[in-house]
Image 1: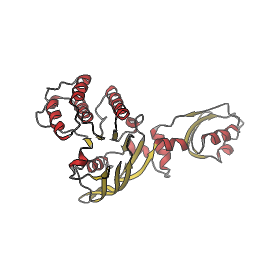
Image 2: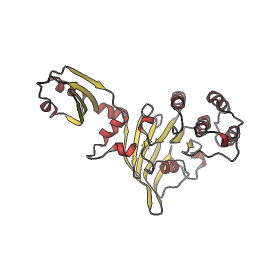
Image 3: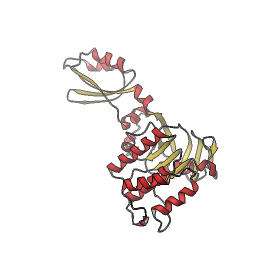
Image 4: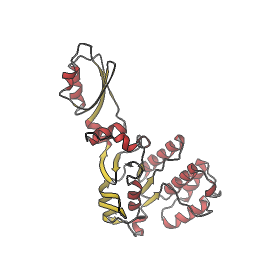
Length: 300
């Protein structure tokens, strides 16, 4: 379990992270979203002990993080701009990390390097941005840590590689005690992998929600009523969060129990009605519930 309580970090007169309280459960993929400058990277650097918070406390499995080697053995941090030693090869970086992580799996490192088609003895400074990202992920997964912190990890990877990395995360979660924490500015990158998502905005944690809990209370329904149906009166009693009409097709995002919603709509004798899955974007738009709050401008 990762616990951050009332965490604040300032750089001179700029408050990068402002009074953030957050719990991250084990065995779930946690997505940390927000625009550039929202505080994601600063927060991850505090989680990993690279930076010390000015206020508040951060603990991983009941251990303080900052300047605590025993705690730092529990996680691997992949930063947005990966750092490698000057003129180092992948094998040299692997040997370096294997000295610091007791469970480092050199056999897995070699297998993943072969699977990704990366040359283990080539100078890393000749790699492309995408290849460096792949190498960082391989080095991190081979450390066999309980947690992995990823800052914009999918940025720079092509769609095939993104899916491959997500599959590796899922495989590790099924086989061992493993919890990925992934920071991104793009909701669509996290759509099919996250169990829980937290939204950072201007340094503050706007919300943190388990997606299954949200989906159980919010529903997207498309319906077509006969032309003589007074649809407005049917909708009055529903807790409608969003409504869009294109021709005769009415698309609703409604809060409440799905059965009760459909029963109410059925009173209008619809000629068509179906439920649709909610996208991650729609979940956050509805979950914030703040009038005039445009999450699309924040995330994209």
